[in-house]
Image (tube, rainbow, N blue to C red; front, side):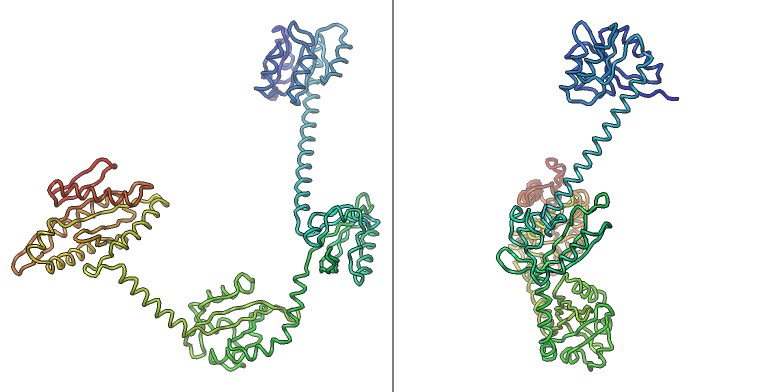
Length: 574
């Protein structure tokens, strides 16, 4: 059998007596982990720094004593059993004194045979006390949680004793009925009830009070607000039973005034509904939520979809929407049934002849004779949608024209900054690489001076097409200004960008340029290239790449300058 680990603090001045104690513990089946102290400060320090299962303390020592050790333990406010182990002859008075001061037991050094049983008993008692405290703490936490739920409930919660007097009411009373809590504690539980509802409720109260089994009763009543108006509340009452005796009745009140008023208004509105329904300029379908079948349709929806009323009433939701849009249409309808949305916009509708029109569908649920219905109004927006689509297409073309350079058909510099800003934000957010390239035609002014601006424009246009051929779908090229071009390379490292730059440079060298018939000229670029640094400002990033391009210009043009680890520039020349 394995020995039981025992963490023991020994308050003893004698090392010999300590060894005897340890031997007794080992003989009793314990594996002691111990520390010996013999002064006030040493014990105080040990209690702060270690966790002990039990304290074995001599009664009298040169610099310390059992009563002093008990005082140190009390001051530390730690629940550890303390047993006095003393060699004083006739120690009954000592035992009584120590037990009075707070020791759990007294064992004579002449009778170590009783030590282990005393320790086992005290450890068991300590564990029992610990579990009891845990239970008490858990109970306290549950009580506090329950109290918080009750105190912050939006429903009124009332405890009424068997004499009909309110003994507790939560703060919701003020929000619902305008009374402060202190105004209703001690008041009669039936004082605010409408006279016409009083008898029914007192009868139910009597039933709850007289029942010796748990019982829950529901009611609806009118209660008087402090301002004199009447509020409609739903109530759920239950009897609180202890030892087969009803102590009180707990009632939960919920304000349903608004709901009841809405139901009444709905009934009144229903009388007018048929006239509005038949003469409405929008199409209307009433759908039975339970069966998902059409319950009623008006003339407008019939003409909109090309059915007779009899034909349409035999249809269901899947018959009036194109198959490819049916899942979306059903999803929107279900959200309307759950009151998550009021209007479903731009819903495709399928006519009897299979042609498609579009409608905005506004819907709400109502209840008739216990059945739930969805009343949907279909506003034909087909003409409007055609006009909107035409407008969007026009705007798209205009937008495209506003961001495209007329000469090169590349994006312009305004769009470059918009896109670079987005790519920088994406790079920072997802920690993705981003590389920027800036290309400048070498000696372009000399070319223009020699061959004219028309040929210069032709060269720019031809070069733009070469650049576009060298890029991936995710890359984008821009005419930055004059003879300068920029290229944004998303999700691209500096090394990968360098490969792209070389490809462009090689393709440009292969391209034939003939400003004059029979006269071939060579075009070269100075290219600056750098990878974006995390959180770098856009202006600084562009400037850094621009400076790299000028490094190529400085060292003879026709090359690529790469920013390697910010400060290490590498120029590639064939």
